[in-house]
Each structure stands twice: as C-alpha cells, then as structure tokens.
Length: 173
Image 1 (cartoon, rainbow, N blue to C red):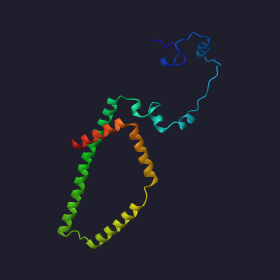
Image 2 (image 1 turned 30 degrees about the vertical axis):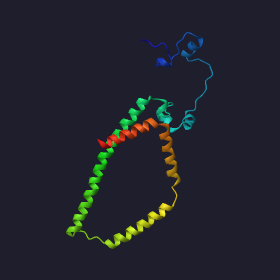
Image 3 (image 1 turned 90 degrees about the vertical axis):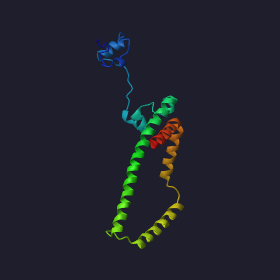
Image 4 (image 1 turned 180 degrees about the vertical axis):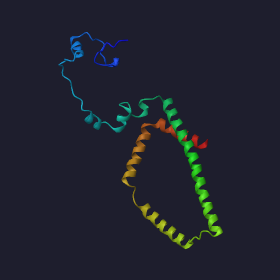
C-alpha cells in the first residue's frame, strides 16, 4: 500500500483530503500558514507525574473500568501481595525465633553472659522514651500521607475492597 500522505509516514496523521491547494503546498514544503508553537517543557511542568506516565486518562479507576474489572484487579493484586507477605512473614518469624533460640542456647551453655541489671535499666529508659513520645502530636508528614491514603481509598473503593479481600485470601492460602 502506498502512502498518500508525503509528509508523514503514519497514515493516521494524514488528512483524508489531500487534493486541496493547502495540502498540495504543504506536501511541497512551502506552506505559509500560521502555526502555534507548543512549549513541551512548560506543558509537562503543569502536568502531574502520573499524567506524564499514564496519559490524560489516568484518573481514579472508577472512571475507566467496570465494577467487575476493578474488583478483579484489586483481588488479584491483593492475593499476590497477601501470599508473598505470608511467605516472607513465615521466613522472618523463623529467622527471629531461630536467632533467639541460638542466643538462649549460647547463654545456657556459657558462651554468653547476660547482664540482666543493665537489660532492666535499658528497658526502663525505653519505657520512659515511649511515654514522652506518646504525649507528642503526630508529625505533619504522617498526617499528610494518611490524608493521601484516605483520599485514594475514597476514589478507588472497589479496587481497595478487592485488594483487601484478595490480601486476606492470599494470607490464608
């Protein structure tokens, strides 16, 4: 198939009617029409990062997908996350428990001597630090991130619900 549009290799960019005098002049490179320049640097500065990455249609998923698709996407990603979380959690629990077991075994056999008075003093100091931190307010960074999470959950209720259900199923499997 020959390309009827001499100035573009992409047929979708070519106009349907190439017989007008303007089109003929444009194909010969001597079109004197006025064009508006688009400053891409300024355009991208105005766009949020997710629109640069996903395009203009990257709003809440409720605007783009059906209810079943949203639940399926949330459920599958939740199940995968829950399954991985379960496996990693078991591995971490085994490692921590095994470490404590080895420390107790080394203490019992005499390889390690524990200064219990120092441990008790350090525990009291840690309790006091926790009481001091408990009285302080939540930092503003934490509040802003929590507000972002709440906003996301409100905009994507179905995906979030599917994710939570899938996460629980993944943890159980």
